[in-house]
Length: 76
Image 1 (spheres, rainbow, N blue to C red):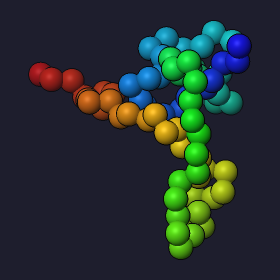
Image 2: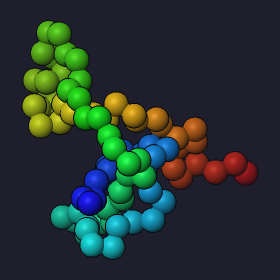
Image 3: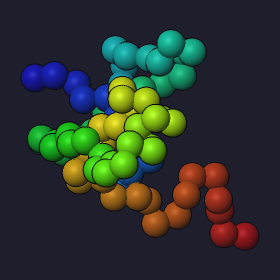
């Protein structure tokens, strides 16, 4: 079984970093807790986003769900 490395801050991203993998800058990589994912291309009818972001950054996970509370923000 393959490790799926996820760089999005999502409800499905694992809480613990992967032991075997690290980013090029040395920061930890996190995996996805889902059994399968569906990666699709972002719809961009006129090509504006693709021109700015680049073709390699146009894929996204169909099951992406943002966290309710962004990382780093705590209630005081």
